[in-house]
Length: 402
Image (cartoon, rainbow, N blue to C red; front, side):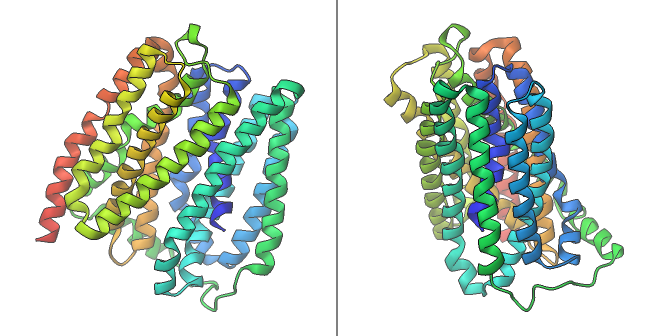
């Protein structure tokens, strides 16, 4: 189920960027339009009560998987056409809504289908399978598209990749229809709009809510721009200031080596926080997330062609990101505690998605205006608000503990 949760997200948010770049679109257009694809994850708390109210989580999971499979096939059909960009972007937007809805149902079903001790036991396993989905989507599928592009052309190659993804999802929906358990608790619940209003009110009247919202929105201000442009930079020709790597190598570097480093960072981060607490590791993890952005400053100025050096730099940046995102997610869990912890966590993740979407929209135009060298320097400058807010958050955690 968590493999199925990861595939559409990585295809919509990461692979689409690589695909459009390989088709010759500008960085400005790619960054602006693909950033809009974050919107369903930003606003998913608005319809999450519907998933709780209507039908069962199991029904939503299998239905969304069939819908995602159909959407992936529709993307494949648009890519060989003259209107491929508008057509595929529209379908990807619908896919994003389906994927966000699947996320809501899957996370709820996980809590219903497993006992408390089983939830703890399988938490690492579900995270692992989500990362496997990233390897398959961002690694294998990108590599296949790069290889097939040479003989079939870019548009046909990507079309075949999305057809394969569609087939995987139809198979997953069929498997889950029979294999997923049927918990007694997975049933329709009573719901009122007054309760929904109370849910939002209790979140936005939390103590230090201004700090909470500011930290969630600004913590990834630099990373949001780096993540949108980094792979475009690696793909761009040396003459344009990039590294000029072929698509298949990017699939290996980011989809395999990068994902493994990210997973290692997450595992190590979780172990250290479990042992010593978030307060102790907050500053080191924030530094680990932001300081390695300097790797891309070096890449932009030196334009290295040594593949081992490039892989090492990407691995270092992703390892640090894994540590930083662990602290970030645990902070959101901490501030979500209370009567509506599941819904409040969904609100936090919506704010997190907004913090990625908005900076991503301007990142492409900014890069084209100032060039890669100055852009990555500005990314480093954009990490300063996160550092400043971290000092306040650490004090907040200390006051809460006392």
